[in-house]
Image (cartoon, rainbow, N blue to C red; front, side, top):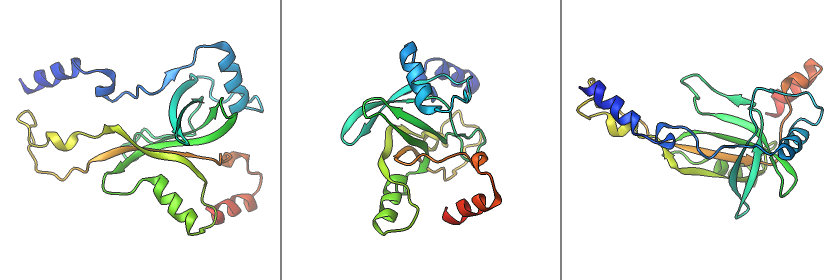
Length: 193
């Protein structure tokens, strides 16, 4: 019966409850697709054509603004780092390309935006400029709630950390390591990181 109860609950869940990110919506207008491809792929390398262009709203400087994304620079599929993704985004309203990253953080730790802002304030070199960032309040893990449920056969009193999905928008957009043409360039990037 516990397996049946699990599948029943799963079948009643919304996309958001299952864990799908409903903030990302597909871009369908041909003019927006051409504009975004031109901004995010100025050399016309046709990067990652299999990806669909998506849009999402972010609170930038106190105002919700729509940004467009096309391809991921990072999208982790392994257990460690799962849910971390990073990509350049384009804001049509400000005509700027920025770097967007999101990932899960342990609830007790500070946000990445606050950490970077503190480092920048203390004049640490090579820290990116934070535009906006914070937690996604509706995206908090629920695993810790189920460790003692009747249908949980292990019933272990484990210390599962609560995690919050955290996002970050920075001004600087890096370049792929593959664009470096010498060992000296790679060593300089490593030194400056």
